[in-house]
Image 1: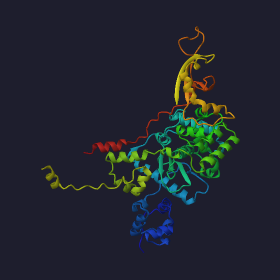
Image 2: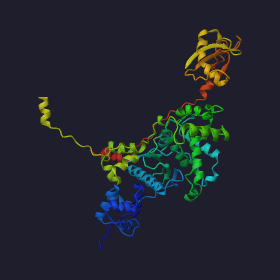
Image 3: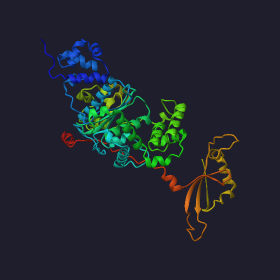
Length: 382
Length: 123
């Protein structure tokens, strides 16, 4: 009996199935092996032979050696998704796998580069039920103070998180129902935020980033089973944090007249870079409008704008992360590694690394040299 | 937007109406008048322009700060320049609009000392 490749990691196969969003049967068809073999490899009952591993790696667009790398225990906190209830389990698994890959990339690059120090407000809540709205207001205010953001509109939320040592990934996932994901990483000892770039709406993306920041600050120490039981409340708290962080009570309330209309909020939208809906929620949270006014505004908003989008939504370019892109740039520019060697070293495809690190498409494509006919040059000079 | 200015006493803003030019500027605020005090008759109009006045308000007493205004107000007046549709000291008005903080980009990476040393030692 032939023996398989020693050191094959079944958990890698499970992870790549999640990241690519394909089933065992689909992978079997692409790789040209039986579904039974895939199942045995995945469950650790058998290991693929060298040629089968090569087929497998080609089918999922990773290096064969990638299947031999153990997956470190990355999560120092529970992974919290910003999604609606109908988001599929497979969609969550896909995003979670890519979130883990971003942590792995940062750890790989971290062998050569140093990232900014981690400066986030510390909170040690163990149960979401002990977090009051006042605590959330204080945490958001402390965040602004710590990061010297003043009380006005924040120019760039993603930059604020990265300045404080957080890592942000913004990627098109094809999953409209999940807007973001965040967690603390034990290996890199810093928080990671994954934002979906599918809805190209800069206002919404800023709010998503602020929402994830809320989870990072408030829910770092919440255990998985408590998080599962209190998911709805934790989402509400992250929403509340995002509102308090983006629209501070002192300054935002001073700019809004006593009976705000949709047009008033629309006029404030470009200044605060926050959607009308988010401003309505904030006004209600600050009790600047009562329940009746809030309902009235929702009805008018729905009648005028519809449920999906608002005017000016296309007027703000989504904020782009920069930290990982800079790490790759430094590694290449300082000659630590050749540009085209990087995807091979991490074991992922060039496209995966480009997307996760926010690099331009084709960044790792080999530069084709142009052959110059010296005789022709000489003739032209003559 | 049209911007005008004038000086007046703090007790009564009676100086404004003396200028035909100012009345002309304030005529743009007709639509705002209707917004503040809607009338039963008259067409609803939307004005593309608004006239704002910067008003230096002096004390009417020479013993109290005669050289400097007590306050500088930002005011939107009606078309007859006799009613204030909006008026607020300039510092209070500006104070409500907090400036966005200047955000520095410090999300920088640097080579680890050992890697840099190794790079430097290479020919």
